[in-house]
Image (cartoon, rainbow, N blue to C red; front, side):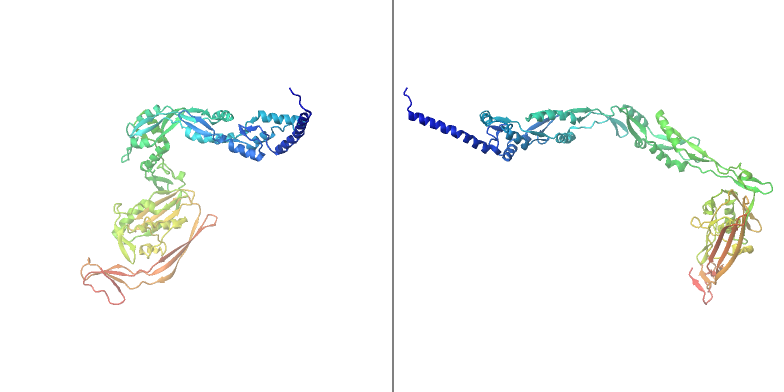
Length: 607
Protein backbone atom coordinates (compact mmCIF):
# COMPACT_ATOMS: atom_id res chain seq x y z
CA UNK A 1 0.00 0.00 0.00
CA UNK A 2 1.35 3.33 -0.90
CA UNK A 3 1.92 5.59 1.98
CA UNK A 4 -0.08 8.80 2.09
CA UNK A 5 1.84 11.87 1.23
CA UNK A 6 2.19 14.68 3.63
CA UNK A 7 -0.16 16.71 1.51
CA UNK A 8 -2.91 14.11 1.83
CA UNK A 9 -2.41 13.93 5.54
CA UNK A 10 -2.68 17.65 5.84
CA UNK A 11 -5.82 17.69 3.74
CA UNK A 12 -7.37 14.96 5.93
CA UNK A 13 -6.44 16.77 9.08
CA UNK A 14 -7.98 19.89 7.64
CA UNK A 15 -11.24 18.16 6.76
CA UNK A 16 -11.44 16.56 10.20
CA UNK A 17 -10.68 19.85 11.75
CA UNK A 18 -13.50 21.46 9.73
CA UNK A 19 -15.91 18.69 10.73
CA UNK A 20 -15.01 19.02 14.35
CA UNK A 21 -15.32 22.74 14.12
CA UNK A 22 -18.79 22.59 12.29
CA UNK A 23 -20.52 20.03 14.63
CA UNK A 24 -21.13 22.41 17.52
CA UNK A 25 -22.45 24.98 15.12
CA UNK A 26 -24.90 22.45 13.62
CA UNK A 27 -26.06 21.31 17.00
CA UNK A 28 -26.55 24.89 18.07
CA UNK A 29 -28.58 25.63 14.99
CA UNK A 30 -30.70 22.47 15.65
CA UNK A 31 -31.45 23.54 19.21
CA UNK A 32 -32.21 27.10 18.26
CA UNK A 33 -34.64 25.94 15.57
CA UNK A 34 -36.45 23.53 17.93
CA UNK A 35 -36.52 25.87 20.90
CA UNK A 36 -40.27 26.48 20.33
CA UNK A 37 -41.08 23.37 18.36
CA UNK A 38 -41.70 19.67 18.87
CA UNK A 39 -38.48 17.70 18.49
CA UNK A 40 -38.12 15.35 15.54
CA UNK A 41 -39.32 11.75 15.98
CA UNK A 42 -42.41 12.65 18.09
CA UNK A 43 -45.86 11.48 17.04
CA UNK A 44 -49.33 11.11 18.60
CA UNK A 45 -51.11 7.92 17.70
CA UNK A 46 -48.83 7.59 14.62
CA UNK A 47 -49.53 11.19 13.63
CA UNK A 48 -46.20 12.99 13.15
CA UNK A 49 -45.99 16.34 14.86
CA UNK A 50 -42.22 16.81 14.54
CA UNK A 51 -41.01 20.37 14.14
CA UNK A 52 -44.47 21.87 14.78
CA UNK A 53 -45.09 24.82 16.99
CA UNK A 54 -47.44 24.04 19.95
CA UNK A 55 -50.54 25.71 18.45
CA UNK A 56 -49.97 24.03 15.10
CA UNK A 57 -49.43 20.67 16.79
CA UNK A 58 -52.64 21.06 18.84
CA UNK A 59 -54.64 21.94 15.74
CA UNK A 60 -53.09 19.06 13.79
CA UNK A 61 -53.89 16.60 16.60
CA UNK A 62 -57.53 17.80 16.79
CA UNK A 63 -57.96 17.52 13.04
CA UNK A 64 -56.18 14.22 12.54
CA UNK A 65 -57.35 12.15 15.48
CA UNK A 66 -61.14 11.84 14.94
CA UNK A 67 -62.04 9.59 17.86
CA UNK A 68 -65.48 11.23 18.21
CA UNK A 69 -66.83 9.12 15.34
CA UNK A 70 -65.62 5.79 16.72
CA UNK A 71 -68.82 3.68 16.97
CA UNK A 72 -70.01 2.03 20.17
CA UNK A 73 -72.79 -0.50 19.64
CA UNK A 74 -75.34 -0.66 22.46
CA UNK A 75 -76.90 -4.09 22.28
CA UNK A 76 -80.42 -4.49 23.74
CA UNK A 77 -82.55 -7.63 24.18
CA UNK A 78 -84.14 -7.41 20.73
CA UNK A 79 -82.39 -4.57 18.89
CA UNK A 80 -79.24 -2.45 18.99
CA UNK A 81 -78.33 1.23 18.74
CA UNK A 82 -75.01 2.68 17.47
CA UNK A 83 -73.64 5.66 19.35
CA UNK A 84 -70.55 7.72 18.54
CA UNK A 85 -67.83 8.32 21.10
CA UNK A 86 -68.75 12.00 20.92
CA UNK A 87 -72.38 11.14 21.81
CA UNK A 88 -71.13 9.41 24.92
CA UNK A 89 -68.98 12.35 26.05
CA UNK A 90 -65.56 11.17 24.72
CA UNK A 91 -63.20 13.79 23.21
CA UNK A 92 -59.43 14.51 22.86
CA UNK A 93 -57.82 17.24 24.90
CA UNK A 94 -55.59 18.44 22.03
CA UNK A 95 -53.66 20.93 24.14
CA UNK A 96 -52.89 18.43 26.88
CA UNK A 97 -51.87 15.90 24.23
CA UNK A 98 -49.71 18.52 22.52
CA UNK A 99 -48.03 19.24 25.85
CA UNK A 100 -46.92 15.60 26.09
CA UNK A 101 -45.42 15.75 22.58
CA UNK A 102 -43.80 19.13 23.12
CA UNK A 103 -42.16 18.10 26.39
CA UNK A 104 -40.52 15.04 24.80
CA UNK A 105 -36.72 15.67 24.99
CA UNK A 106 -37.17 18.60 27.35
CA UNK A 107 -37.74 16.99 30.67
CA UNK A 108 -34.21 17.50 32.12
CA UNK A 109 -32.89 20.22 29.81
CA UNK A 110 -31.91 22.50 32.65
CA UNK A 111 -29.63 20.02 34.42
CA UNK A 112 -28.40 17.83 31.53
CA UNK A 113 -25.05 18.39 29.82
CA UNK A 114 -24.84 19.50 26.23
CA UNK A 115 -23.52 16.10 25.18
CA UNK A 116 -26.30 14.21 26.99
CA UNK A 117 -29.04 16.31 25.42
CA UNK A 118 -27.49 15.81 22.05
CA UNK A 119 -27.51 12.05 22.50
CA UNK A 120 -31.17 12.15 23.66
CA UNK A 121 -32.26 14.14 20.67
CA UNK A 122 -30.34 11.84 18.32
CA UNK A 123 -31.98 8.79 19.90
CA UNK A 124 -35.43 10.50 19.71
CA UNK A 125 -34.87 11.03 15.97
CA UNK A 126 -33.65 7.47 15.46
CA UNK A 127 -36.13 5.54 17.61
CA UNK A 128 -39.03 8.02 17.73
CA UNK A 129 -41.74 8.26 20.44
CA UNK A 130 -45.45 7.71 19.83
CA UNK A 131 -47.80 9.20 22.49
CA UNK A 132 -51.37 8.18 23.25
CA UNK A 133 -53.76 11.14 23.16
CA UNK A 134 -55.14 12.64 26.37
CA UNK A 135 -58.83 11.70 26.35
CA UNK A 136 -61.69 13.49 28.21
CA UNK A 137 -64.69 11.34 29.22
CA UNK A 138 -67.80 13.21 30.42
CA UNK A 139 -69.83 10.40 31.96
CA UNK A 140 -72.82 12.66 32.45
CA UNK A 141 -73.24 12.78 28.65
CA UNK A 142 -73.32 8.96 28.60
CA UNK A 143 -75.93 9.00 31.36
CA UNK A 144 -78.11 11.50 29.50
CA UNK A 145 -77.75 9.43 26.31
CA UNK A 146 -78.90 6.28 28.13
CA UNK A 147 -81.76 8.08 29.87
CA UNK A 148 -82.98 9.24 26.46
CA UNK A 149 -82.49 5.75 25.05
CA UNK A 150 -84.51 4.35 27.95
CA UNK A 151 -87.61 5.95 26.44
CA UNK A 152 -87.30 3.44 23.59
CA UNK A 153 -86.13 0.50 25.70
CA UNK A 154 -88.44 0.77 28.69
CA UNK A 155 -91.80 -0.92 28.46
CA UNK A 156 -94.35 -0.61 31.24
CA UNK A 157 -95.70 -3.75 32.76
CA UNK A 158 -99.39 -4.30 32.03
CA UNK A 159 -101.51 -5.20 35.03
CA UNK A 160 -104.26 -7.73 34.73
CA UNK A 161 -107.54 -5.91 34.39
CA UNK A 162 -111.16 -6.42 33.42
CA UNK A 163 -113.02 -5.07 30.41
CA UNK A 164 -116.64 -5.57 29.49
CA UNK A 165 -118.00 -7.35 26.48
CA UNK A 166 -121.50 -5.99 26.86
CA UNK A 167 -122.22 -7.00 30.47
CA UNK A 168 -119.74 -9.90 30.49
CA UNK A 169 -116.51 -9.18 32.40
CA UNK A 170 -113.43 -10.33 30.47
CA UNK A 171 -109.91 -10.53 31.87
CA UNK A 172 -107.12 -8.78 30.01
CA UNK A 173 -104.05 -10.73 31.20
CA UNK A 174 -100.94 -9.15 32.68
CA UNK A 175 -97.55 -9.08 30.97
CA UNK A 176 -94.03 -8.11 32.05
CA UNK A 177 -92.39 -4.84 31.24
CA UNK A 178 -88.68 -3.99 31.03
CA UNK A 179 -86.47 -1.23 32.34
CA UNK A 180 -83.01 -0.08 31.26
CA UNK A 181 -80.56 -0.03 34.17
CA UNK A 182 -78.66 3.15 33.32
CA UNK A 183 -76.07 2.94 36.08
CA UNK A 184 -75.20 -0.70 35.40
CA UNK A 185 -74.89 -0.04 31.65
CA UNK A 186 -72.60 2.93 32.35
CA UNK A 187 -69.99 0.55 33.76
CA UNK A 188 -69.73 -1.21 30.42
CA UNK A 189 -69.50 2.08 28.52
CA UNK A 190 -66.80 3.30 30.90
CA UNK A 191 -64.65 0.26 30.02
CA UNK A 192 -65.33 0.47 26.28
CA UNK A 193 -64.42 4.13 25.82
CA UNK A 194 -61.02 3.63 27.44
CA UNK A 195 -60.02 1.36 24.53
CA UNK A 196 -60.72 4.06 21.92
CA UNK A 197 -61.77 1.39 19.46
CA UNK A 198 -65.12 0.24 18.15
CA UNK A 199 -66.86 -1.88 20.79
CA UNK A 200 -70.15 -3.49 21.70
CA UNK A 201 -71.69 -2.76 25.11
CA UNK A 202 -74.66 -4.84 26.28
CA UNK A 203 -77.58 -2.85 27.68
CA UNK A 204 -78.47 -4.03 31.15
CA UNK A 205 -82.25 -4.45 30.97
CA UNK A 206 -84.31 -5.73 33.90
CA UNK A 207 -87.68 -7.41 33.71
CA UNK A 208 -90.47 -5.43 35.43
CA UNK A 209 -93.23 -7.68 36.74
CA UNK A 210 -96.84 -6.38 36.79
CA UNK A 211 -98.28 -5.10 40.05
CA UNK A 212 -101.48 -7.08 39.46
CA UNK A 213 -101.29 -10.56 38.02
CA UNK A 214 -104.60 -12.08 39.20
CA UNK A 215 -108.04 -10.76 38.23
CA UNK A 216 -110.12 -13.93 38.35
CA UNK A 217 -111.57 -13.24 41.78
CA UNK A 218 -112.80 -9.82 40.65
CA UNK A 219 -114.19 -11.24 37.41
CA UNK A 220 -116.22 -13.88 39.22
CA UNK A 221 -117.60 -11.34 41.69
CA UNK A 222 -118.61 -8.91 38.95
CA UNK A 223 -120.26 -11.71 36.98
CA UNK A 224 -122.38 -12.54 40.01
CA UNK A 225 -123.31 -8.89 40.61
CA UNK A 226 -124.46 -8.41 37.03
CA UNK A 227 -126.45 -11.62 36.93
CA UNK A 228 -129.70 -9.64 37.04
CA UNK A 229 -131.34 -6.43 38.27
CA UNK A 230 -131.23 -5.36 41.90
CA UNK A 231 -134.65 -4.57 43.38
CA UNK A 232 -135.02 -2.06 46.22
CA UNK A 233 -138.19 -1.90 48.28
CA UNK A 234 -139.74 -0.68 51.48
CA UNK A 235 -139.90 -3.33 54.17
CA UNK A 236 -143.26 -2.30 55.61
CA UNK A 237 -144.91 -0.16 52.95
CA UNK A 238 -147.92 1.95 53.78
CA UNK A 239 -150.90 2.17 51.50
CA UNK A 240 -150.01 4.27 48.49
CA UNK A 241 -146.28 4.05 49.12
CA UNK A 242 -143.96 4.23 46.08
CA UNK A 243 -141.67 1.46 44.90
CA UNK A 244 -140.19 -0.94 44.28
CA UNK A 245 -137.18 0.46 42.41
CA UNK A 246 -134.89 -1.44 40.06
CA UNK A 247 -131.18 -0.89 39.52
CA UNK A 248 -130.40 -2.46 36.16
CA UNK A 249 -127.23 -4.47 35.49
CA UNK A 250 -126.08 -1.60 33.25
CA UNK A 251 -126.44 0.83 36.17
CA UNK A 252 -124.66 -1.58 38.50
CA UNK A 253 -121.79 -1.98 36.02
CA UNK A 254 -121.27 1.79 36.05
CA UNK A 255 -120.87 1.68 39.84
CA UNK A 256 -118.12 -0.98 39.91
CA UNK A 257 -114.68 0.06 41.14
CA UNK A 258 -111.52 -2.01 40.50
CA UNK A 259 -108.63 -1.69 42.96
CA UNK A 260 -105.35 -3.66 43.20
CA UNK A 261 -104.09 -5.01 46.49
CA UNK A 262 -101.14 -7.38 47.09
CA UNK A 263 -100.93 -8.31 43.42
CA UNK A 264 -104.63 -9.19 43.16
CA UNK A 265 -107.39 -7.16 41.47
CA UNK A 266 -110.39 -6.57 43.73
CA UNK A 267 -113.86 -5.42 42.71
CA UNK A 268 -116.10 -3.29 44.87
CA UNK A 269 -119.15 -1.10 44.46
CA UNK A 270 -118.69 2.67 44.49
CA UNK A 271 -120.47 3.63 47.70
CA UNK A 272 -120.71 7.29 46.67
CA UNK A 273 -122.41 6.26 43.39
CA UNK A 274 -124.89 4.09 45.29
CA UNK A 275 -125.54 6.91 47.74
CA UNK A 276 -126.11 9.32 44.82
CA UNK A 277 -128.68 6.91 43.38
CA UNK A 278 -130.46 6.62 46.73
CA UNK A 279 -130.46 10.39 47.24
CA UNK A 280 -132.85 10.52 44.31
CA UNK A 281 -135.32 8.43 46.34
CA UNK A 282 -135.05 10.39 49.59
CA UNK A 283 -137.84 12.84 48.85
CA UNK A 284 -140.00 10.13 47.28
CA UNK A 285 -139.79 7.94 50.37
CA UNK A 286 -139.86 10.70 52.96
CA UNK A 287 -143.03 11.36 54.90
CA UNK A 288 -143.09 14.51 56.96
CA UNK A 289 -144.30 13.97 60.51
CA UNK A 290 -147.61 15.61 61.37
CA UNK A 291 -147.96 17.45 64.65
CA UNK A 292 -151.07 16.90 66.67
CA UNK A 293 -153.58 19.72 66.83
CA UNK A 294 -155.12 20.78 70.11
CA UNK A 295 -157.74 22.84 71.84
CA UNK A 296 -156.93 24.41 75.18
CA UNK A 297 -159.43 24.27 78.03
CA UNK A 298 -158.79 27.37 80.10
CA UNK A 299 -160.79 26.01 83.03
CA UNK A 300 -158.96 22.70 83.34
CA UNK A 301 -155.65 23.97 81.90
CA UNK A 302 -155.52 20.91 79.68
CA UNK A 303 -154.93 20.23 76.02
CA UNK A 304 -157.40 18.14 74.08
CA UNK A 305 -156.13 16.62 70.82
CA UNK A 306 -158.45 17.41 67.91
CA UNK A 307 -156.17 15.77 65.33
CA UNK A 308 -153.71 12.98 66.15
CA UNK A 309 -150.03 13.26 65.42
CA UNK A 310 -148.44 11.06 62.74
CA UNK A 311 -144.88 9.81 62.72
CA UNK A 312 -142.84 10.67 59.68
CA UNK A 313 -140.37 8.56 57.76
CA UNK A 314 -136.91 9.16 56.32
CA UNK A 315 -134.51 6.90 54.50
CA UNK A 316 -131.13 6.27 56.10
CA UNK A 317 -128.94 6.52 53.01
CA UNK A 318 -125.66 5.31 54.54
CA UNK A 319 -127.30 2.34 56.26
CA UNK A 320 -129.14 1.49 53.03
CA UNK A 321 -125.85 1.53 51.12
CA UNK A 322 -124.35 -0.91 53.63
CA UNK A 323 -127.37 -3.18 53.32
CA UNK A 324 -127.14 -3.17 49.52
CA UNK A 325 -123.42 -4.03 49.63
CA UNK A 326 -124.11 -6.89 52.03
CA UNK A 327 -126.93 -8.19 49.83
CA UNK A 328 -124.68 -8.18 46.77
CA UNK A 329 -122.01 -10.12 48.64
CA UNK A 330 -124.61 -12.67 49.70
CA UNK A 331 -126.17 -12.92 46.24
CA UNK A 332 -129.51 -11.39 47.25
CA UNK A 333 -131.35 -9.51 44.50
CA UNK A 334 -134.08 -7.99 46.70
CA UNK A 335 -133.03 -5.41 49.28
CA UNK A 336 -135.32 -3.64 51.77
CA UNK A 337 -134.16 -0.05 52.26
CA UNK A 338 -133.36 1.17 55.75
CA UNK A 339 -135.86 3.76 56.93
CA UNK A 340 -136.21 5.39 60.32
CA UNK A 341 -139.23 6.95 61.92
CA UNK A 342 -139.27 10.72 62.41
CA UNK A 343 -141.27 11.71 65.48
CA UNK A 344 -143.50 14.79 65.38
CA UNK A 345 -142.43 17.83 67.35
CA UNK A 346 -145.76 17.85 69.15
CA UNK A 347 -147.26 14.38 69.64
CA UNK A 348 -150.85 14.00 70.72
CA UNK A 349 -149.59 12.97 74.17
CA UNK A 350 -148.11 16.43 74.83
CA UNK A 351 -149.52 18.29 77.80
CA UNK A 352 -150.16 21.97 78.31
CA UNK A 353 -147.68 22.00 81.17
CA UNK A 354 -144.93 20.50 78.99
CA UNK A 355 -145.53 23.02 76.22
CA UNK A 356 -146.04 26.06 78.42
CA UNK A 357 -149.51 26.74 77.09
CA UNK A 358 -151.19 28.32 80.06
CA UNK A 359 -153.29 31.31 79.06
CA UNK A 360 -154.90 33.38 76.31
CA UNK A 361 -152.27 35.92 75.18
CA UNK A 362 -154.08 37.49 72.21
CA UNK A 363 -157.33 37.51 70.30
CA UNK A 364 -158.37 38.93 66.95
CA UNK A 365 -161.79 38.97 65.34
CA UNK A 366 -163.62 40.17 62.26
CA UNK A 367 -167.18 40.03 60.90
CA UNK A 368 -168.48 38.79 57.57
CA UNK A 369 -172.15 39.69 57.99
CA UNK A 370 -174.14 39.57 54.71
CA UNK A 371 -171.34 37.87 52.83
CA UNK A 372 -172.48 36.04 49.70
CA UNK A 373 -172.89 32.34 50.20
CA UNK A 374 -169.73 31.49 48.22
CA UNK A 375 -167.66 33.94 50.28
CA UNK A 376 -169.20 32.58 53.49
CA UNK A 377 -168.36 29.03 52.35
CA UNK A 378 -164.73 29.89 51.58
CA UNK A 379 -164.26 31.53 54.99
CA UNK A 380 -165.66 28.48 56.75
CA UNK A 381 -163.42 26.21 54.65
CA UNK A 382 -160.20 28.17 55.23
CA UNK A 383 -160.52 29.07 58.93
CA UNK A 384 -160.23 25.46 60.27
CA UNK A 385 -156.90 25.09 58.42
CA UNK A 386 -155.39 27.08 61.29
CA UNK A 387 -157.37 25.61 64.16
CA UNK A 388 -155.21 23.74 66.68
CA UNK A 389 -151.86 24.69 65.11
CA UNK A 390 -148.78 24.91 67.31
CA UNK A 391 -146.07 27.36 66.21
CA UNK A 392 -142.70 26.54 67.85
CA UNK A 393 -140.62 29.25 69.54
CA UNK A 394 -138.62 31.28 67.06
CA UNK A 395 -140.52 29.96 64.03
CA UNK A 396 -142.14 32.17 61.41
CA UNK A 397 -145.83 31.59 60.82
CA UNK A 398 -146.75 31.69 57.12
CA UNK A 399 -150.44 31.97 56.33
CA UNK A 400 -150.07 30.52 52.84
CA UNK A 401 -148.04 27.55 54.10
CA UNK A 402 -150.90 26.32 56.28
CA UNK A 403 -153.67 27.46 53.95
CA UNK A 404 -152.55 25.15 51.15
CA UNK A 405 -153.78 25.31 47.55
CA UNK A 406 -156.79 27.49 46.80
CA UNK A 407 -158.51 25.54 44.03
CA UNK A 408 -161.84 24.08 43.10
CA UNK A 409 -160.35 20.66 43.82
CA UNK A 410 -159.68 21.84 47.35
CA UNK A 411 -163.37 22.76 47.70
CA UNK A 412 -163.28 26.54 47.24
CA UNK A 413 -166.06 28.38 45.43
CA UNK A 414 -165.94 31.40 43.15
CA UNK A 415 -166.72 34.69 44.83
CA UNK A 416 -165.87 38.38 44.66
CA UNK A 417 -162.21 39.34 44.70
CA UNK A 418 -160.49 42.70 44.22
CA UNK A 419 -159.07 42.88 40.69
CA UNK A 420 -158.52 46.18 38.93
CA UNK A 421 -161.19 48.86 39.00
CA UNK A 422 -164.03 46.39 39.30
CA UNK A 423 -164.67 43.47 41.57
CA UNK A 424 -164.14 40.14 39.82
CA UNK A 425 -165.37 36.63 40.43
CA UNK A 426 -162.67 34.06 41.13
CA UNK A 427 -161.85 31.01 43.23
CA UNK A 428 -161.28 31.66 46.93
CA UNK A 429 -162.93 35.03 47.43
CA UNK A 430 -163.23 35.68 51.17
CA UNK A 431 -159.98 34.06 52.29
CA UNK A 432 -158.60 37.52 53.10
CA UNK A 433 -161.22 37.63 55.89
CA UNK A 434 -159.25 34.82 57.54
CA UNK A 435 -155.79 36.39 56.99
CA UNK A 436 -157.12 39.74 58.30
CA UNK A 437 -158.34 38.08 61.48
CA UNK A 438 -155.00 36.30 61.98
CA UNK A 439 -153.21 39.64 61.49
CA UNK A 440 -155.32 41.24 64.21
CA UNK A 441 -154.49 38.47 66.70
CA UNK A 442 -150.77 38.79 65.96
CA UNK A 443 -151.08 42.59 66.20
CA UNK A 444 -152.62 42.46 69.68
CA UNK A 445 -150.32 39.65 70.78
CA UNK A 446 -147.32 41.90 70.21
CA UNK A 447 -145.68 39.44 67.81
CA UNK A 448 -143.20 40.76 65.21
CA UNK A 449 -145.07 40.97 61.89
CA UNK A 450 -142.63 40.38 59.05
CA UNK A 451 -145.00 40.45 56.04
CA UNK A 452 -148.37 42.16 55.70
CA UNK A 453 -150.05 43.62 52.60
CA UNK A 454 -153.04 45.98 52.60
CA UNK A 455 -155.82 45.71 50.02
CA UNK A 456 -155.80 47.91 46.94
CA UNK A 457 -159.27 49.24 47.85
CA UNK A 458 -161.06 49.49 51.16
CA UNK A 459 -163.27 46.46 51.89
CA UNK A 460 -166.34 47.14 53.99
CA UNK A 461 -166.29 43.74 55.73
CA UNK A 462 -163.06 44.63 57.49
CA UNK A 463 -164.45 47.84 58.99
CA UNK A 464 -167.57 46.27 60.48
CA UNK A 465 -168.36 46.51 64.19
CA UNK A 466 -166.02 49.44 64.72
CA UNK A 467 -162.86 47.70 63.55
CA UNK A 468 -161.78 50.84 61.74
CA UNK A 469 -159.75 51.27 58.60
CA UNK A 470 -156.21 49.92 58.12
CA UNK A 471 -156.50 46.67 60.10
CA UNK A 472 -156.71 44.29 57.12
CA UNK A 473 -154.20 41.86 55.56
CA UNK A 474 -154.60 40.52 52.04
CA UNK A 475 -153.06 37.29 50.75
CA UNK A 476 -152.67 35.82 47.28
CA UNK A 477 -150.76 32.54 47.23
CA UNK A 478 -147.93 32.11 46.62
CA UNK A 479 -146.74 35.69 46.09
CA UNK A 480 -148.60 37.71 48.73
CA UNK A 481 -148.43 36.26 52.24
CA UNK A 482 -149.00 37.19 55.85
CA UNK A 483 -146.19 36.25 58.28
CA UNK A 484 -145.27 36.82 61.89
CA UNK A 485 -142.67 35.36 64.26
CA UNK A 486 -143.35 33.57 67.53
CA UNK A 487 -140.73 35.48 69.53
CA UNK A 488 -141.80 34.04 72.88
CA UNK A 489 -139.75 31.20 74.41
CA UNK A 490 -142.85 29.00 74.45
CA UNK A 491 -144.97 27.36 71.73
CA UNK A 492 -147.98 29.25 70.45
CA UNK A 493 -151.35 27.46 70.07
CA UNK A 494 -153.78 28.95 67.56
CA UNK A 495 -157.50 28.29 67.83
CA UNK A 496 -160.12 29.51 65.39
CA UNK A 497 -163.85 29.80 65.93
CA UNK A 498 -166.81 30.99 63.90
CA UNK A 499 -169.60 32.37 66.06
CA UNK A 500 -172.81 31.39 64.30
CA UNK A 501 -175.50 34.02 63.93
CA UNK A 502 -173.06 36.85 64.50
CA UNK A 503 -170.92 35.76 61.54
CA UNK A 504 -167.90 36.52 63.68
CA UNK A 505 -164.52 34.90 63.03
CA UNK A 506 -162.12 34.67 66.00
CA UNK A 507 -158.40 33.77 66.21
CA UNK A 508 -157.22 32.98 69.74
CA UNK A 509 -153.51 32.69 70.64
CA UNK A 510 -152.56 30.62 73.72
CA UNK A 511 -149.08 30.54 75.27
CA UNK A 512 -147.31 31.67 78.43
CA UNK A 513 -147.97 35.31 79.24
CA UNK A 514 -144.64 37.13 79.38
CA UNK A 515 -146.25 40.37 80.55
CA UNK A 516 -145.88 42.29 77.32
CA UNK A 517 -148.26 45.16 76.64
CA UNK A 518 -149.52 46.50 73.30
CA UNK A 519 -150.57 50.08 72.58
CA UNK A 520 -152.30 51.19 69.38
CA UNK A 521 -152.44 54.71 67.96
CA UNK A 522 -154.68 55.55 65.04
CA UNK A 523 -155.74 55.06 62.45
CA UNK A 524 -154.61 58.48 61.29
CA UNK A 525 -156.36 59.17 57.97
CA UNK A 526 -154.74 61.34 55.31
CA UNK A 527 -154.66 61.91 51.55
CA UNK A 528 -158.39 61.29 51.07
CA UNK A 529 -159.45 61.12 47.43
CA UNK A 530 -162.86 60.77 45.84
CA UNK A 531 -163.63 58.32 43.06
CA UNK A 532 -164.41 59.32 39.53
CA UNK A 533 -167.74 58.92 37.74
CA UNK A 534 -169.46 55.56 37.86
CA UNK A 535 -168.69 52.86 35.33
CA UNK A 536 -171.45 51.42 33.13
CA UNK A 537 -170.68 48.13 31.44
CA UNK A 538 -172.80 46.21 28.98
CA UNK A 539 -173.48 42.62 30.04
CA UNK A 540 -175.39 40.76 27.33
CA UNK A 541 -176.20 37.98 29.78
CA UNK A 542 -178.50 40.32 31.73
CA UNK A 543 -182.20 40.64 30.78
CA UNK A 544 -182.82 43.39 28.21
CA UNK A 545 -183.34 46.83 29.64
CA UNK A 546 -182.09 45.93 33.16
CA UNK A 547 -179.30 47.46 35.22
CA UNK A 548 -177.62 46.24 38.45
CA UNK A 549 -175.18 47.89 40.82
CA UNK A 550 -171.99 45.83 40.60
CA UNK A 551 -170.01 47.75 43.23
CA UNK A 552 -170.37 50.85 45.37
CA UNK A 553 -168.09 53.88 45.23
CA UNK A 554 -165.42 54.07 47.94
CA UNK A 555 -163.13 56.99 48.77
CA UNK A 556 -159.38 56.51 48.69
CA UNK A 557 -157.18 57.39 51.66
CA UNK A 558 -154.00 56.61 53.57
CA UNK A 559 -154.47 55.04 57.01
CA UNK A 560 -151.52 55.00 59.42
CA UNK A 561 -151.58 52.87 62.56
CA UNK A 562 -148.79 52.87 65.11
CA UNK A 563 -148.17 49.92 67.42
CA UNK A 564 -145.86 49.99 70.42
CA UNK A 565 -145.02 46.75 72.25
CA UNK A 566 -143.55 46.90 75.76
CA UNK A 567 -142.12 44.10 77.87
CA UNK A 568 -143.15 43.35 81.47
CA UNK A 569 -140.69 45.96 82.77
CA UNK A 570 -142.00 48.66 80.46
CA UNK A 571 -139.11 48.53 78.01
CA UNK A 572 -140.03 49.17 74.37
CA UNK A 573 -139.72 45.99 72.31
CA UNK A 574 -141.24 47.06 68.97
CA UNK A 575 -142.34 50.36 67.49
CA UNK A 576 -144.19 49.59 64.24
CA UNK A 577 -146.00 51.65 61.63
CA UNK A 578 -148.66 49.98 59.48
CA UNK A 579 -149.38 52.24 56.54
CA UNK A 580 -152.25 51.34 54.17
CA UNK A 581 -152.69 53.34 50.96
CA UNK A 582 -156.13 52.63 49.51
CA UNK A 583 -157.05 53.82 46.05
CA UNK A 584 -160.49 55.31 45.36
CA UNK A 585 -162.91 52.94 43.67
CA UNK A 586 -165.67 54.09 41.38
CA UNK A 587 -169.18 52.76 41.48
CA UNK A 588 -169.89 50.23 38.75
CA UNK A 589 -173.15 49.22 37.06
CA UNK A 590 -173.78 46.37 34.64
CA UNK A 591 -176.74 46.66 32.22
CA UNK A 592 -178.50 44.58 29.63
CA UNK A 593 -179.23 45.28 25.98
CA UNK A 594 -181.69 48.13 25.49
CA UNK A 595 -180.77 50.05 28.64
CA UNK A 596 -179.45 53.54 28.06
CA UNK A 597 -176.85 54.65 30.66
CA UNK A 598 -177.25 58.20 32.03
CA UNK A 599 -175.72 60.91 29.88
CA UNK A 600 -173.00 62.95 31.58
CA UNK A 601 -169.51 62.28 32.93
CA UNK A 602 -170.21 58.60 33.37
CA UNK A 603 -167.80 56.13 31.78
CA UNK A 604 -169.35 53.53 29.51
CA UNK A 605 -167.62 50.29 28.64
CA UNK A 606 -168.55 47.68 26.05
CA UNK A 607 -169.77 44.27 27.10
